Image 1: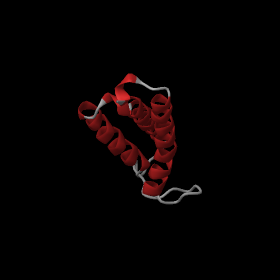
Image 2: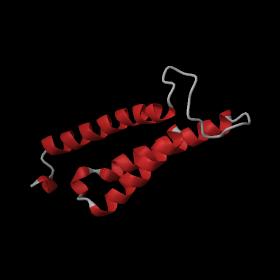
Image 3: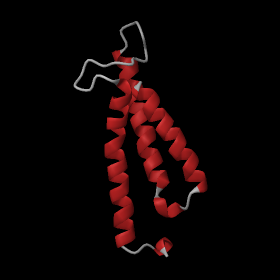
Image 4: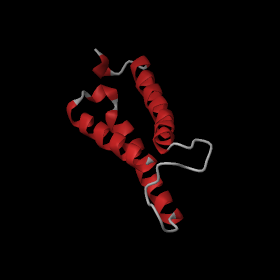
Length: 96
C-alpha cells in the first residue's frame, strides 16, 4: 500500500507543478516523489515471492501500509521545505 501512497503523492504534486508558481519548486518535490515511487516499485518487484503484490500490512516496525507510506513522504516534504526556505533566504528574484 505504500507504493500506492507514494504514486498518488507523485501524481498529485506533478499535477500541481503545472499550475503553481515556479517559486515553490514543485518540480524538485515531484522528482523526489517519483524517485521514491520507482524505488518502492523496484523493491516490490525484487522482493515478490508470490501472493499479494500490494499488501495492506507490513512485518516491520510500522505495521500499517498507509502509515508507512506517509512516514516515507515526511522526510521528502521536510527536504523540499528546507530547499524552498533556503531559496527564499537567498533572495531569489521570484519571491517578490
